[in-house]
Image (cartoon, rainbow, N blue to C red; front, side, top):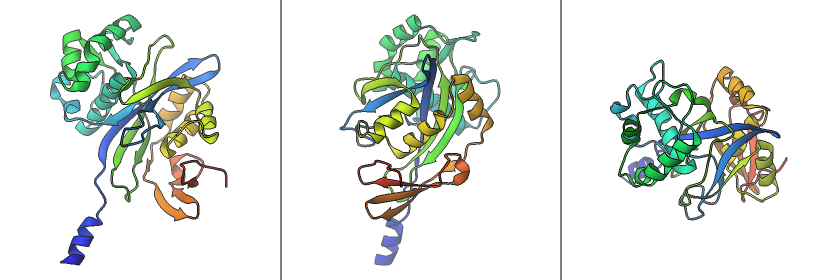
Length: 276
C-alpha cells in the first residue's frame, strides 16, 4: 500500500494551459519588446522580468465569441482559446487591446483603447465581465489572426506547478500605449532583446530561463517584419526542459531542433546563466 501511494505521488503534475504574448514594435535602435516586472509576492516568477501572459480561463473558450475572433480559418477549440487568452492577458497586464472595429483591418486607436481600458480592465480582472461581454458591448472583433506562434514551453515534469505555455508574437504600432497593471506587475518597459539579456547577465534583472531563450531568438531580427517572417517560417518545437542537478546549479537540456542554438545550458542557483 505504501509503494502504491508513493508511485501515485510521483506522477507528474498535469500542466495548465497558458498563453504569453511578445508585443513587438520598431524603434530607431531596432526591434523592441514589451515586458513587465512581476510583483515580488506573486507565487510564480515573483520579481522576474517577463512577457505579459497567464493561464487560460474557461471564458476564453466562450462560443459567443464565434465570428468575433478575427480568424478567416478555423482552429481546434483549445488553440482558439489560447489565442483569446493571449489577448485577454495582454489587455489585463499591458493595457493593450488587440482588437479592431468590425470590418476594419486596423487595430483600434490609442484614444479608444485607453477608454476601453479605463472602463473594462478592472471589471475584467475582477471577473465581473468577460472578453465576450466587452467585444459585444463595443462591437469589436479580437485580432486573433495577428498572433504568430513563436514558441511552446512546458514546465519540467519535476516541478510542483506546471504550465503548458504557448508564446505568440504580436506587432503593435509605435504610438500604442502599453502599461503594467500595478497589481500583478509593478514595472513595465519597452526593451531591446539584447538589453534584456545584458541586464540579466549583469544581475540587474531576474529573467527566467525560457524568457532568456526567447529573447535570444527575437534578438536575431532587426525589425518586426523580419521577426514575424522568421516565426511564420519556422516550425514550433515543444520544449520541456530536462533538469540535471550539478555542482553549483543545474543543467537545462532542451531539444537542439527547437532552434535556440544550444541543447544544454548551465543555470546557477541564483538563476543566472554564466558562460561555461
